[in-house]
Each structure stands twice: as structure tokens, then as C-alpha cells.
Length: 146
Image (cartoon, rainbow, N blue to C red; front, side, top):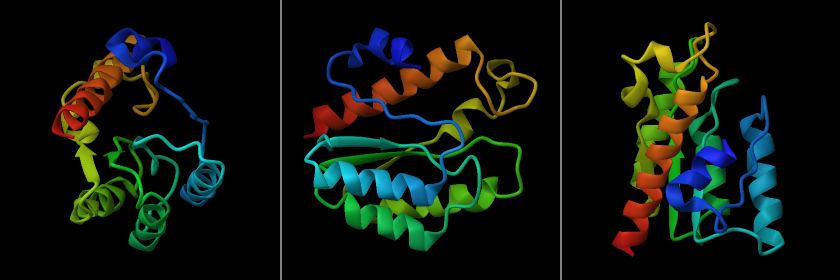
């Protein structure tokens, strides 16, 4: 994913911390540790909720940690699991925070199954490229707005 993001102008200013199967609680702890160490950027991209539920309470906890970020870009989920719709509702409702922005990954790829491997979750290279384009656009839009 890092090469795809770098090819869209995010190289050098990007600190990517992705982990297979990361749970929401672990992401909150990681963000808190980054905040405490002074390692959070002004724009933070969050994409969690593929692997289990993402509650409104957890969203609020995450936003408490990220209150000082200029922009928090949340990416909703496209995952063939029972929690997909509920998690996307929680993420969409998060735009009630002034610094939260939604990237509608689900909507962008709903009619593009060819971007995913057979499991319907993991991205093929062209899916990773498309994902990177969406994130680069979101960051560029947020940077221009500030």
C-alpha cells in the first residue's frame, strides 16, 4: 500500500501504520501512544472496522484522542461481514465532529468487485491503487481547505 500512496504524492509526509486484523481498541491505544509521543500528524487517516464491530462509544474514544488533529479522515468499510452496515453507520455519524471527514470507500467500490480478491475483502493491486487515489484526494482536499 505504501508504494501506491507514495505514487500519489504522499511520499515523505506519510507515516503508515497498517496491521492485518487490527481491532478498534488496539487502534485507539496506538493513536494514544502516538499522541503521547508527539507523533501524530495534523491529518490522520483511520480505516478500522473490517475485522469486528466499531461502536459509537469507541468512535467517541478515538475522537477524544484525535481532538487536536486538524483533520481526521475516516474510511468506511467494504467487507462481506454482518457488521459492515452497522460499522459504516457509526463512521458516517462521526462527521458530527468538526475535524472528521468521511471517505466513502464502500460506495466507491460497491460496483467494482474486480478490485478485490475472491474473499471480497482484500485488494488486488489495482484495488490498492484506487484506494490510494481516494486517500490522496481526501488529504489534498483537506489540505486545500486549511
